[in-house]
Image (cartoon, rainbow over all chains, first blue to last red; front, side, top):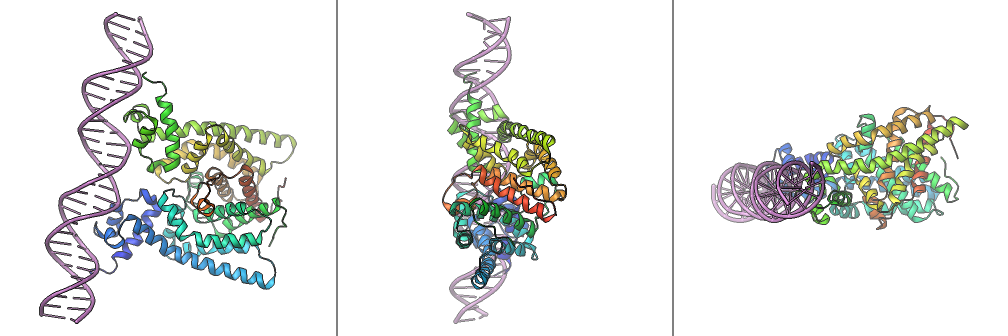
Length: 213
Length: 213
DNA sequence: GCAATTTTCAAATGATTGTTTGAAATACTT
DNA sequence: AAGTATTTCAAACAATCATTTGAAAATTGC
């Protein structure tokens, strides 16, 4: 092993490059130059560009989903102990870990990586989402269905998708940037508030009582 | 003029291709083959790939923003006549025209085109949004600020961006598709409800009374 | 310290991309 | 109908991209 940190350097630069330009827009040559490694290093260590992307996603998604499920289980346990399950607690378990990750040292680039990840459309990314993210999403959907028994499953799925989307999507999108000339990230409370509000309306529409906090 | 519909055919196939694969992912060769025109036709009629994309966006965005501003002006006029401006009316003026367009004959592809448009990240798309969409967005922001005088401008911008995003983004995103194996588009009411709910929470947070309908 | 394995390196490969070219065909003008 | 302008066409161009190659270097195991 000439240098033990080659893989790590590729991953670190990969997060930044994929987060800045997306999967398709990322040029391996640029990534390689930024990382200061050889042309062939990516293919040697990760097999292919897809392999590198998969490795990066799996790594950080692991951290994210672990924390998310911890918080979800805590919310479910609390609900089992003292009454009903609040939508806000479920949503917080979804949203907060992302902000924890993003606000941790070096997490900004990771945040942007996820941001761009959920905006991609290639079949490869689609497959990857199903593999890596969907199992956790399914658990959240189940919890939300329990909290909102009167709301049709499809509506719950949609509102969940929007919440996860707005969470990870942050403020990197074309619209907010164009309006404010800012890339400032949204706050945890802003996202949570907006989405809880959305779920409240859903609940109201289908006749359930609102789970206010 | 050998064939008067060459431009039209290119545009029609362009909407579909860009909507399916995004700007970067669209291969001019594929587009050309689908349209049944010659290799050089795109560059001859539109100058470049960017020129084609710009032409398509400008065309459909024109239809969209015209209708949006009509509805916004109607809401403002109604508010001037009979009291206060309701957030829901402003948001409806933003959301409904998109659904009108998408549900019109051949509009499905246009909907997907916009969907992918707002998810793109290249500087070119960023510029295009500023040119084509931002003037209208600014008018909506101004109206929302008037309806929500106690909410900081930045929060209004963010909530607006989320609303426009969820509207155009529809259900094409990775998350919803993975959860439901469906590409079924969200309904107007679902989007509007969710976003009005989000704005309600915003209003409540900053101490304003809620503009319920 | 020697052999085997792993990692690095510079260069080349093969495929794909948007775009250009110059001639042929078609439409328009008078 | 002749001449001009416009549009189409097949082919090639030039640039970019991920990936492969095979030898050199470094590390590890014994």
